[in-house]
Image (cartoon, rainbow, N blue to C red; front, side, top):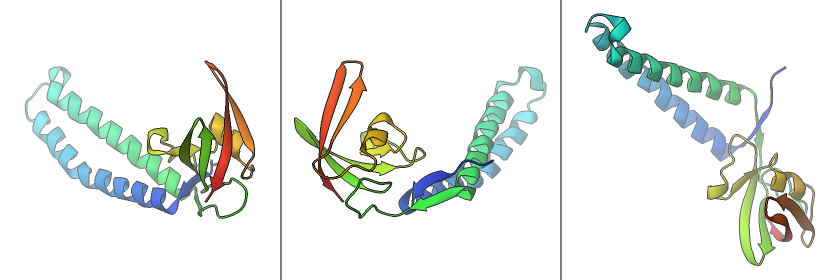
Length: 150
């Protein structure tokens, strides 16, 4: 059974762009492999090994992205009164912080995108403005109050 990947339209577009770049890179990698092969003995050919490693990484990522796109569930912006996938939430814990709730594929906390599967994301799902979410951290429990949902 295939896993469903929750991604936004923007996230899908980013993955499609990355896939295009990786597919275009295939020719250059194949060319480097052919050039390295011409150097002779492949067992002690660092250029050949490096090019093959690059090819393996490239092909693995292509397969991964194709699988994600094939099994993608495109989420729309959360516009309800409760936190859901696609919602942008402003939290207060001393200072205010804004997060967009996205699927695990797109999550990037440094960019303000947290996964619905993360501890904070799980705790926020289904809550309304004014509700609190408490997250256990290594430094103790941290309490957030939901200030707004967009």
